[in-house]
Image 1 (cartoon, rainbow over the protein chains, first blue to last red):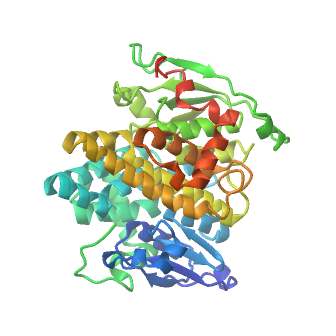
Image 2 (cartoon, helix red, strand yellow; image 1 turned 90 degrees about the vertical axis):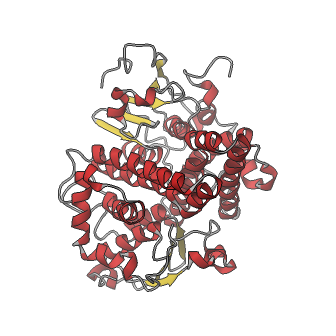
Length: 230
Length: 251
């Protein structure tokens, strides 16, 4: 985890993140926390063992998904809600630009990923397709949705991308893109040569300490033999 | 952005300026922010629940807009001109001068910044987070999994019954979660006594889910009560699918 910034050193409230190492939604929040220099306690929720159904966890998040973020007496679930909460409460290293056009672009990219890609390649959905249809269909389904989303995002970023997705500064779009590209490449063999902008910025993320520290394999609950993710 | 139809052919024929209804309640509660003149165009399909959300938001803010129909059943979304507006080829999409935004949550958050009358997000951070979470549950955990194209896929590849079971499962799971989340904090509306973002997302989801998937709303008393409250609000009434310019006359 990144070291605390001067601002966050004056905010002594305890921050806790309920996360699973391979959850791409949790991955987004880890990146955001690191970019903002926020220290937090990592509480692992092992989705492969069904820990999300634990009654104590359900009290925190009735939707029974990770990530969940606790900031003093405030409990926020859902990566999008958490990150926008962080933007308000911990505004160091802002993730959304003031310019409304650029802000809208960042929100749109984040939402393409969180609504049109990630939910459709969740493990539960893929297991259903594999059970009811076939394994090949499962892979084709996931690839189709990822490719549709990446094709759209590649076009949307034309003219806006700099060192990062929407300019030279890391912003919300990057926070959502990094985990999604990681899943696409490692689990679904997405051919990133079709998306030169996305491929280039993905390489930039790999060099960035906040992104490196958020990587699934660097989390306290990471273990190489797991094949579960969401 | 030209006001002309997407193409000169027959696809996009229903495009007219929708006059915003001035909603007494909305204006009375925000008297210092009269609707600013705007030059808005909304690409929408009458039964798209994502477009439905944006129509509610525009109405609540008293914003006039031009309605451009994109017939999803006829494949208007694949028109190259529409693809320039939204490369993901979904509705809704909003054009506001030189700003083009697609995706309902991105559009509505843009409207919040640009047209702050009748704010949809509270100042209180806890309540704001709750509204965003409800919106996100609907837009990520329910709608994409029971949306038209997912349903088409399951019907084609598996069966009609399986399609219904699948859709019901996701709607029920999402509604059960939201019911738990808002039970203690709901007032007249989802997160208090004012219509907020959560309501904008809930109304279309309940509207789409209940008849289509035969959801038993007695399981979700808070959501059922909210659904009745939305039916009384002019901003919500005017956004209903059958009131849109492209709704078939016999729907």
